[in-house]
Length: 265
Length: 323
Ligand SMILES: Cc1cc2nc3c(=O)[nH]c(=O)nc-3n(C[C@H](O)[C@H](O)[C@H](O)COP(=O)(O)OP(=O)(O)OC[C@H]3O[C@@H](n4cnc5c(N)ncnc54)[C@H](O)[C@@H]3O)c2cc1C
Image 1 (tube, rainbow over the protein chains, first blue to last red):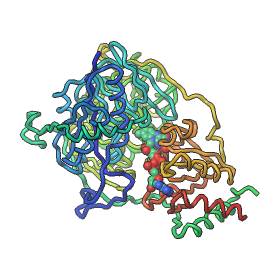
Image 2: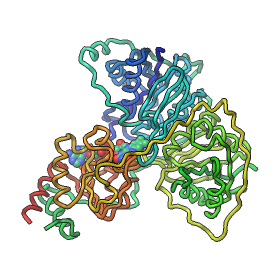
Image 3: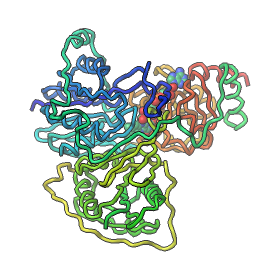
Image 4: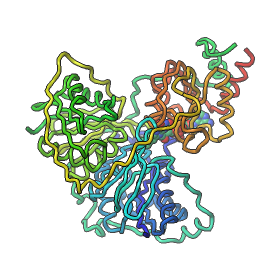
């Protein structure tokens, strides 16, 4: 029952950073940002590697993005992926999730896949849409916000997280697509020898021609998408901000807690 | 009967999701031409629910089928598809909930429709939909637009729109036929699992001090616990900490954890992701401690401390002990 597993990985700017809007208002300033693998995707990769270890098969990691994504793909190889594929779509912003998903779906068609895994959402744009779109486009059954995966002979049984800690367990046949939730497992660290080996492994590149397209803009879209503008958020409300040296902040916090009656005597 | 807005109702265990009322309000505020707003209730044995929803000043369509008794992506995509094809709306509105994540993009993929998810506000202008969103951990606001002659699938973030209230009298309730090919329903419902009740009940606490990834190490939980004790509170957490099993799942505040309404909520090293905010925004007094002055937690907090929580808490404890 060897499984062909495909994991979609996205590289995102480290979300702990502070961001500035580019002068034209169409993107953030990208110089000097550091990038990392999207949080939920780490769980998707780990789930795939565990399924391979348990049932046999191969894990292919697939990303859509510029050359800077290569270290992320190598890290995935070091963590147990067998092959890395980069769809060479170089738009650094790539705001249009529909276009991204259509290109990804076209790439997945060229790969053997019993199970496609994505993260539940991306930490940068938070659409939670790539996995579902790819499933719809490829006609795959799918389940979202998955926290547990069990593979049986003919099918899969998975637990999908709902609001408030409820879980819905569903069964679905393969091939299928799952979006994996944070905390579904404990992602491993890459062992040093594997990191060294991965540094030498080739990364397969897919350009538009390989998918039968003259260019990425030739991918048929049922709509026109545009970014109107980015701006700093206008908050509905905002905290009264306390800054300054720690001892002073501590005094203010203690005073506030006393005033409001939260300090037990 | 083209045009208008189709709103997909969400319900579980015979109860309407609060987000459905928000969708009705968002749709109604768009003042669309022609067929206006229609709410579709999919399910099995949901006529009563539909009648109830017609009280919220919206025309209701009921689409019943045994295969819709429990939500599955496959059956819902087929059922929604049928109604979208027969009514050809301009927009299909769905809540950005766990069910919405599952349904909206898959529907858009299967029907080759445009989709925009997790929107805070939307506006229909000549020939285009403009949506306001938050990106990069809520730190950047973005407006995007979509032009299409096909229905646009949109998901709205729960909590972003005030809910629709009931009006005087009720609107129409119309049953619509649903055809579902059972062979094409590949996803099968197995069972529901409900969280076990154990540990403390966060939702009954008056004071909650929650720790987030900003506390950096499990050992530092002791500091948070000590502070909580000093102010008569209990310790809650953001999701990463319960995922790491630093604290039991019962301590998780947010969309997929507990919704709490304490008198005092102190967020220690929590960024303020929408899923966390969903569980604590109605607390009486919210204090936040974070090193990043742009962290979105400061938008819901009443008082914000721009500080390293690992330095501020020991200093506060000293202050409190000094009396
Ligand atoms: C379907 C779904 C459901 C979810 N449900 C929930 C849920 O119920 N509850 C929940 O919490 N999350 C939930 N999440 C996860 C959520 O999206 C965020 O990832 C999570 O809330 C982030 O937790 P955090 O704020 O602790 O971590 P981060 O976002 O990493 O933030 C850490 C913060 O700490 C600050 N910081 C760092 N060091 C320090 C320091 N020394 N002192 C002070 N501040 C510091 C940083 O500036 C940052 O703002 C869910 C996600 C999904 C996709």
